[in-house]
Length: 324
Image (cartoon, helix red, strand yellow):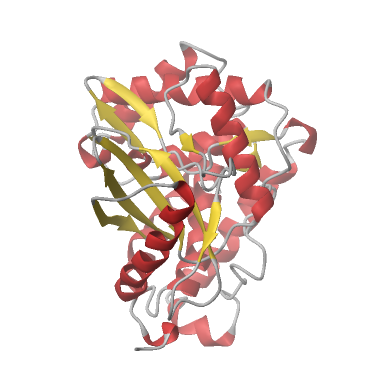
């Protein structure tokens, strides 16, 4: 058996299937079929058990604490009780919201969370302005709900550009070993963008922070019979609603119809709540902050981040031209 460190990313996800088998024993479920349907920071398996279907999430990178997952599942339970269209957590036979499972060749126990299956397909790249209006409405509903939700524990705050703990995502972009990625003016762009977005964080008061989804992008929203359902709350964080909106819209920046999609999202949001941007350019500052976080994150998880940088740095340059 290959060591865990010698496996490719895909190989690690496949090996986590044995962890999934172990986890299902704690749910008193007999799976007729178990198959990998997605993964990156975690592995997601579809579970068919008789007529019932579920999605089992197994930690792959182990980049979230118990306290953060406690906050996630507590909010999801509250959202379910209030009838909002979000993922539903399925409790283990013991009543626990998640379990730890193991398998040979996988280092350490892995946290596993079971969800009711969400039908439909992701919004993805083909989403229309009308669908983004519906997504804006859903985003606002989540933000309003979170304001009245006391929460359990406290997830990580997005109060600085590189918000993951050093143990999970060490800041490496200033290391000498990374210098060859930041030639041709990229270092100046990086430094200028960091300086600009740091001012945006400073203009926000910490007491206004609240729970937000933290990753409400088009592949974390399913559409089925015209209705939207939000899933994958794994990155739930303590942040401002404008930051959460920035995360959603950051995935659209290179689409030729970005303006129409953004306008649709804003219109839907305003149907429910006040638009969270407090000054011109604030939203774009947090979009840039998210991109800068990924400049560092990708360097930690990819052997060669150059393809990502080739698309991200032109976006940062345009941000500085507009707001620098």
